[in-house]
Image (tube, rainbow, N blue to C red; front, side, top):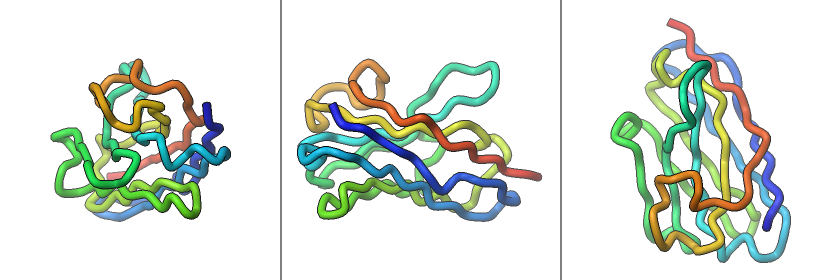
Length: 126
C-alpha cells in the first residue's frame, strides 16, 4: 500500500477552478493507478476520474468530462485533478485512491483501490 494525502480543496464560486493534489509516499507509486472519487452529504461515493500507472490512459465520469483533467507526475509521487468550470453540484469531499493493479480492471469502482487519502473538501457556491 501507499499513503496518500490530498490538498487543494476550498471554497470557490461557480465557474471557478481548483487544482487538487494527491501526494503519495512509497517508492512503488509509479506502478499504481490513481483514482479520484467524491462524496456529497447523504450520497454514495462516486467515481470522478482515474489515470493509469503510466498516465497513458485516463477515464472520466460523464458529469465531469470536458471540465476536469487528471494527471500525474511520477517523479514527484503526485497526482492532480484540475477542475474547471465548477458547478454547485461538484460540492463534495474529494478522495484520491491508489490501485495496485496499475489500472487494469474496473477503475470506476472503489473496490479496485487499496489505499485512500483522508479527503479534501470542495465547496462551490452559486
